[in-house]
Amino acid sequence: MYRFLSSTFRPIYNNAKLKKNKARNSKYHFIAKYLRELVQYYGIRGRGKKGEYGPFFTGMSILMNIPSFAIRLNGPNSTSKYKEIAMRFTDEKKGMIIKLNNKSYYGQFEVFLDCSWLSSFPEEEERLIFGGRFRLEIVTIIVMQTKNNYKLHMRAYYLFDAMITGQGLRNIGNVSNVDADILDLSINNYL
Image 1 (cartoon, rainbow, N blue to C red):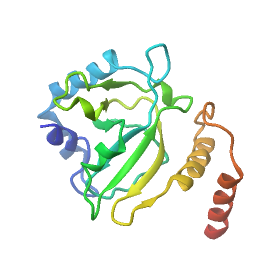
Image 2: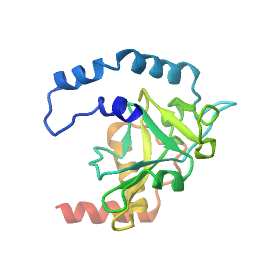
Image 3: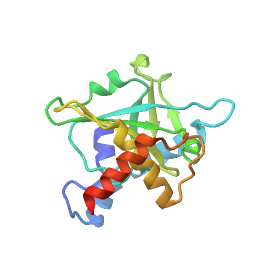
Image 4: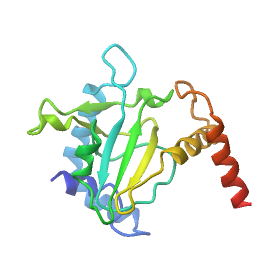
């Protein structure tokens, strides 16, 4: 059921009309509403006495276009504290793993629900993110087919994206020479 619920938050095909997505989502209106409220009211944040910081891993069975380097997860997203668990949900030929973190200034206010206490698989350390009020940093993307890990590039592009969009840069650390070199090389190749 979770797969059907989460699929109603995104289009089935490119250029799908919003009206069709809303019609599909309306079948799950009440469960989506109550699940989002559960996460927002009873979830935990990164900051605070009972807070918890990432990283959080999510496995995708397909390659997806990621529109930014800091994202808000509006629909229900199941994540794990362990990369090995996320690997179970990928496809070796065309899947990917996304590593997220909530250590950035605004990201630490994003609420998520620790589902391990009610899961049939508590060792998965599942965290449910639903609501997307604050942006989370994409630390890396690992493409399963090629085994490429884009960690160095993602950090440099995240910092650049954060500067352009006004994202707070506290708790991120300093911009290193490697970050500057990656951005410089990217800009020079683009021009």
